[in-house]
Image 1 (cartoon, rainbow, N blue to C red):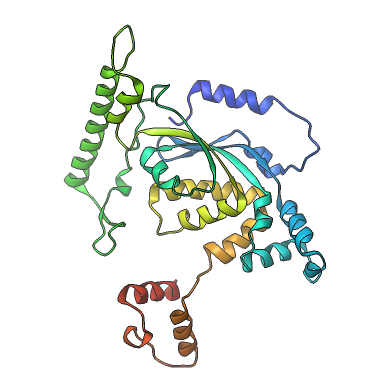
Image 2 (image 1 turned 90 degrees about the vertical axis):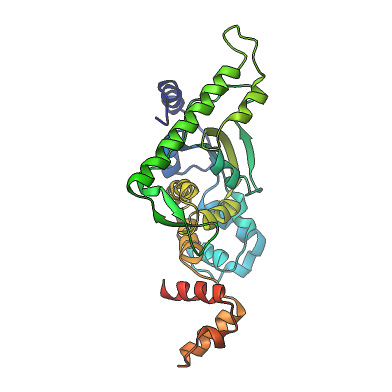
Length: 302
């Protein structure tokens, strides 16, 4: 269960506590504020606060470029221009703060994006809950034979059952020992900051994550990609739905140019031009390695 009754009561209280403001607000984001959007088996994302909207991006761009933007007919067109030409600072005018509950191993991937402000739940001071991410059977995949960091076919039958049993047993055994070691109920036990080292990487943690829109789009470009690990991709997908309601023009441009677009190397562009001219191009004549050619073909075939 991602949200406890106490957390739901806190959310309900926050949503009924109304404030009057003169700053820009977005109805779509106001509807998201504080609500928990469930992800995986125990995780969620929640919008805690936000600043700016599509107009803030346009406003910042026009301050920067002045008359140079007059040729753009409307705000959506200007935002598409900025996205198309990789301008960044106008998108930095918007920020969002999220409350995220996620497995520790997903958090370790997520934290690689070092362009946000993060404050994580501290297991030095508090006791973590007995909540573990256990994959659904359809996400129990074998190791890919071609990609060292990817997945292959789904495990089935007895092998899937064996792996699930191991995950459940090991997770609960580690937590049992964690509880036994803790200094609680009058027991002179181990300090929390040491007892936590025995916990598995699939236990859930929580953090507040604040990021500007430019860097959020970079995160989403990588993590909402079909090649991203499933367990972080579902968080990115949930965030995408929120961002689409927050800055619809900016998200539409991002979806078109980044999520739905492709970038070719110089060799790739040369191959495309030769193909358009009617030439038959293969890997041997492309100048690409086997891996590059495979990725190039995948982009062309969609």
